[in-house]
Length: 64
Image (cartoon, rainbow, N blue to C red):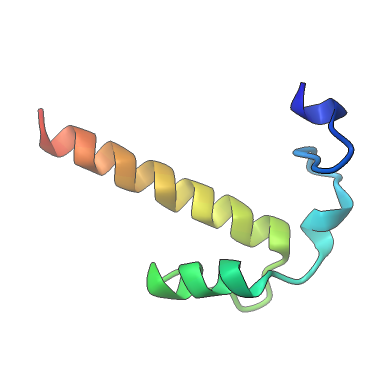
């Protein structure tokens, strides 16, 4: 289970979520028009996940 993997934790309390965003995260967020001021690595991760899911759903819905 993902929660048991110590190298990467999906838990909201995971230490990495409180760190500053990576350069890769910031680069993708900027390209996608996501404002990241004041966001943590976890915040940006969630914003990118939402944007990814939204893009996938938009593409699916356009085909209906």
